[in-house]
Amino acid sequence: MFKINYLLFFFYLISVNFSLGQEVTSYYLIRHAEKVLTNPNNPNPHLTTKGHKRSLEWKKILEKIHFDRIYSTSYYRTLETAKPIADERNIEIQKYDSNDLFNENFRKNNIGKTTLVVGHSNTTPVLANKIIGKDIYSSIDERIHGYLFFIQIIGKKTTYQLLNLE
Image (cartoon, rainbow, N blue to C red; front, side, top):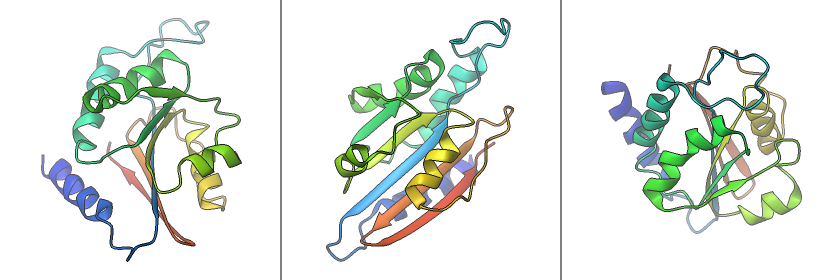
């Protein structure tokens, strides 16, 4: 519980605008929660019971963050991870193509916004790298579902942090 309280306080502090009038753009990137692995031929499995619990944990961890937009791929596992967060805020989940997310249109539409993107082990780090403008992160191990990539852009300065909430 201490870990969650500390994180909530951390996110509260970073969500407060200290930018002296500059636009603040914030991205929170997470990987989908645990998926059903019983049928390796199923390209679109749902979340497991543990995965549904994790999606509720994400909702709790991120409860103090005011999201303007929430994005998910069209797969069940990403939609089911994003749903509790979106439902609590009454925000429609916007579906995206993971191969073409951080294009100019996406970037422009999210300037000055706080955005959550739920992705996959191989696409979430790629998106983080594109936003940051550097190749820093590699694919996430298939067993890890608790990484939170936080990226904030204030003016021309980009800061980023990877938190492991496993």
